[in-house]
Image (cartoon, rainbow, N blue to C red; front, side, top):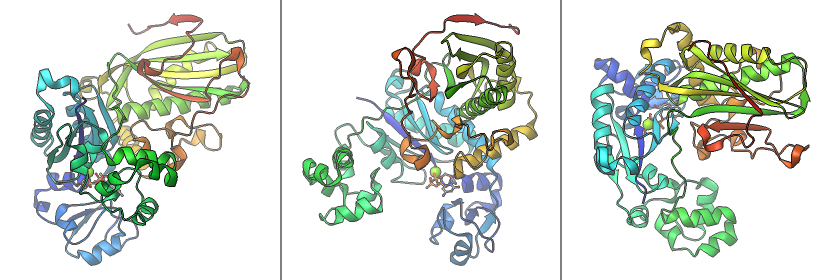
Length: 449
Ligand code: DCP
Ligand code: MG
């Protein structure tokens, strides 16, 4: 039986502002764009502002009418990003199985942490205390046997909530709640379910599963399970810090075009760096993988002068490694992998990068998180029609991803060589998704060792 925690910061952006400006505590604070006379929407509303009916995604002008005494503040993405990293680092002290799903929430699998830190409710209480004492913010935590139930539980007693659903109590816990709380129940499904008199999750659980399957197909089968608290989705952490984060791209047509190859490396370096940042990690080693049209595969590895989570150092290293190998042959596949991780905070001693550059990167991350991965891209990648690896964000749960990124199944390559169907694009996370075919030659360079 797994013990899963869902952790979500309370009124995140607004709470950070109230933390940093004590005069705002206890007052309605609305974070988002300009002021109440500006276009744009509310990013976050403090709980004091919510009493007036203000909530995220509401137009600022409407928020201004509902709550004229609120203090309106602009979004400071870089600041929230760095606070988010501090919180994620605290979570990782309790288990390596931490799966961030947005800037302010994460799932943890603490099944294996009991001997060290206690049972689920104990770990939850310790995490709440650590975030309060070390970061100065309150979080709400749900403890359950599944992600689905833990997430619903964390939302139930906000702010500063702790809701524990003991094993076996899942269905009873869910029964009285409105069906809108269930994953996969949007307005359309809710309206269709109302025709059957279904208003609560308990009503849904009482419907025969085969009726749901007849009415909603596969989705109906999932609904029947979820209504009973059944959810097989596992927490995907980075696991062993010795593992890696990588991306591979197989070209539709093998190419020797230098510009295409280099832009692909840049896109992949960018994607890998973004995934490092969203995981709060820096990598000390990068690897480039090159497979040519004859299937000759090489990997070249290099230690970086200092651990990083930024695109440029990763790109510079892989470009240099690749340039030595690209001599006009037609290339079938390129891959970029980062490994030898440490948490960003532990590596702060090494952090020599320019803080201004970091702020720009973090602001871009915030924009991508809010508006989708295509919202920001490097000038060099515009119009390249290259698949952008960073479109698939492992930091966002599939059900929260936009339709365009919704796990479009990796297209099998039409021309399949050697009988193997290679995916066009692939993210790799540790060796859980290790390349299926070992490199033909392995050549390790460690110029900085
Ligand atoms: N956010 C945003 N725009 C939205 C929703 C959220 O910019 N439409 C940002 C601001 C939030 C942060 O993401 O502070 C986290 O989102 P949550 O949905 O967790 O909302 P809060 O943390 O603000 O409040 P809650 O206490 O309900 O979790
Ligand atoms: Mg939140």
